[in-house]
Structure formats: C-alpha cells, structure tokens
Image 1 (cartoon, rainbow, N blue to C red):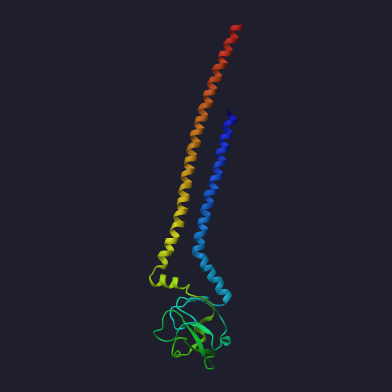
Image 2 (tube, helix red, strand yellow):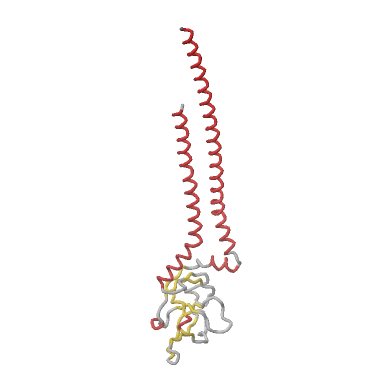
Length: 234
C-alpha cells in the first residue's frame, strides 16, 4: 500500500514538473516577441547607422520634387561620406537652411560644390529633378545627413499614412495588446492549475491517510481475533 502511495505521489510530481516548464516556456517566448517587436527595430536601425556611417541610415520621401526617379513613399538608404567625396550629380539628404523649410529633410540632387576657405568648409547647392529652378541657398557640409545609395519604392507609404493620421502609436498598441494578454493569461492559468493540483494532492493525501488508518484498524482487529483463537487452544 505504501508503494502505491509513493508511486501516485511521484507520478503527480512528474506531471507537475512537465506542466510548469510548458507554461514558463510560453511566457518566455511571448516576452521575447514583445521585446523583439519594441527593440528589434531600434537595434537594426542602430547597427545600420554604424554600417553606413550616418545617424540617419533611412528616410521616407514625402514629396515628388525628385520624380520620376524618386517618388513620394519611397524608402531611401543613406551613406555618410566625407564632404570632399561628394560629387555633382549625387542625390543627398540634408536639413534645409532657409526659413520656413519643412521639418522633414530635403532630398535633392547636388548641382554645385564650392569650398569656403574663410570658414574652412565645403558648401553645396542642390535642385529637385522635378523642379524648374535650383534651390536658392548654398548650405554647409554639416547639414548633409547622407548620400542616397538605394531605395525601396513606395514601402514608406505605410509610415506616411500612419504618421499623418496619428495611427502609428494606436496600431503599435493594438499589435502589442494580444501578446501582453497572452502572457497574463498564461500566468493566471498556470497559477490556477497549480492551486488545483495542490488541492488535489491534499485531498488524495487525506484519502490515503484515512485508508491507511482503516487498514491498521482492520489489522489490529485480525490480530485480536487470532490472539483469542490462540487462547482457546490452551
């Protein structure tokens, strides 16, 4: 009887050990997915900025001033270069120096380069391919974010639409909520199962104790009967 009891307890302990790792594994996987969703893009952007030698390795085009070669919604990849290595004909991304300029950086083609000996710097002049006139002002090398080295057509429209309509943060939250709920649900479910198992173990333990006591009583009764029979033999 004791062997059966030990076997039941061991089998319950094994089932408990197999259930707990599964729940923990789900929580770990869900946590990793949330972490990757939030921080993976930042890590990729950081590594790309190091590889391309610029703080702005990617930009999304928000105007058609460079059409038809570069269009609104195109995702551009930039590479940082020394100003002396930039040539006429290169497409550069820079912060506009003139008053009333848009917050977004300008994407135009270099049409003029000069060296300002007094200020010891290179200065550039640009023009949009779709524009009739050159940009009015020359701007210093410090305003250039990078030279365009590649593009993915129209993929940036997602960012433009989400940003313009203020949907970027809400959609990010909507995508994150199911993962967060999944983690919380797994934790709660795991705790409930743990409580149920503990209650069942206590109940089974009490039942086993009662059975053992009953068996002991029966054994004592049998011993008493046998002892009486022995007395009669005399």
